[in-house]
Image (cartoon, rainbow over all chains, first blue to last red; front, side):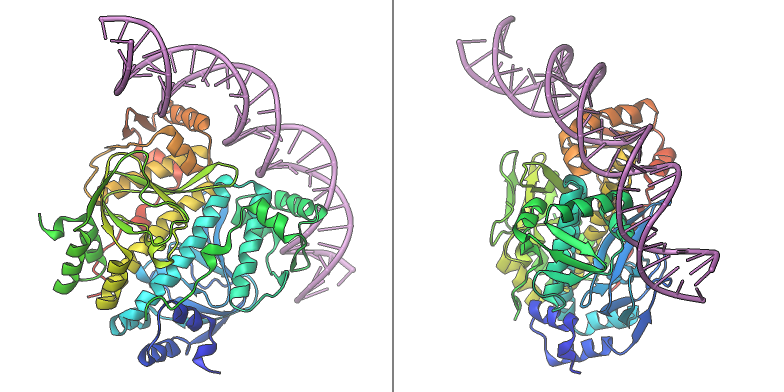
Length: 243
Length: 243
DNA sequence: CGCTTTGTTGAACGGGTTCAATTCGCGTGG
DNA sequence: CCACGCGAATTGAACCCGTTCAACAAAGCG
């Protein structure tokens, strides 16, 4: 399997044209493959000198635990995403990262990553683009928490995940496999699991979308997009922007 | 006035040791100084080929308008912050940027910025660090919207702003000047202005903090920090990390 | 086969919204 | 100098979206 098959490498290449030495460095990043399952987090909040990971297979979520014991999920990551970068850049991880299903990820240690930035600063430029996409996603989630109601917020999240999965070739048409539980959704949406359940039923009964047995189906895409105020522009990229 | 006096340059230098050519490029960035007042946004959502700005004086907010007319403020920026980077990287701005008081900012045009990334990729590395700090701030705001109650959320925002102002030398001790209206606070916190007003009164009457006539005062810092679950670690940086 | 996790539904409660009215400071024009 | 208008702050009362508590069903698993 070639390095070019990695969704992560293809993503970076879409932002910045990559030279051979840069591709070689990225190949290095993929050497240390690890597997994670339920129970063992990839990164723990507060951990120092945590590694970054390139997610190859499966889903993870990034989250924070509050002093009252409640939890806020900051985002979900899917194959091709880079995890735990802030933990490397700032020496201490400001959030935990938990596998949602069976996960395979390439570990990139602090020294490797910073060394790569020294050797090929253009790589850092490409990663700047990737991080900016992540930030756009985080901002949309923030808007959902602040100003969208529960139905709009849920619809927006499923539309976002669908669009992101399509970009890495893991979804086609109007449905996709989704390993999230209603509890995970609740912690991501700032809602209770009970209410997530009710709103999912409502969306299903209104013929907008169905989430059942790990499968999301968009039954009426146009109305769902209108309800969520969803505009996929923030996820798309066309490149390379830097030759 | 030397280029080293710019809070923005000092911040980047704290992440990555900057060479003379890199400092010269940053000096270029400061050539095109502009002034903004109430009514004219620096960047409009949907605008193509918008510029980036280095904020020199005054405060701005980044926001999005939803289809129902409501607004979500994504963040506040203060002197030393870089604005509108995503609008440059992705050709289209995904949010608007509005001046809150009288603002001075150095405009950095798309070509300048991308040209600088070509010429000095280490600059992009430094900006990657800056963007990651911004993302950490956005994530904390997301946590507030999702899981903190109104009082905790308000307290957290004021503590965050105080800590950020201290880092650029615009606050000392237990108080600072704050140009935000209760309407701006409401749009940032996902609350109504009415409720912001009530919670501010409650915080004042409980002796925790006072926000009046444009001045924030922390009357009981310890209890306020506890109420907000505030940990300033995500704002601090010690560098340079890359020599 | 019992135990745990996830999903489902009902009923009562509550934090925050909405609507509405009042006050206060301040700039502007007559 | 004062009347007027306007944005921001303030407060009360009714309402509602989402929470909490509680019970039960269904599925997976040792």
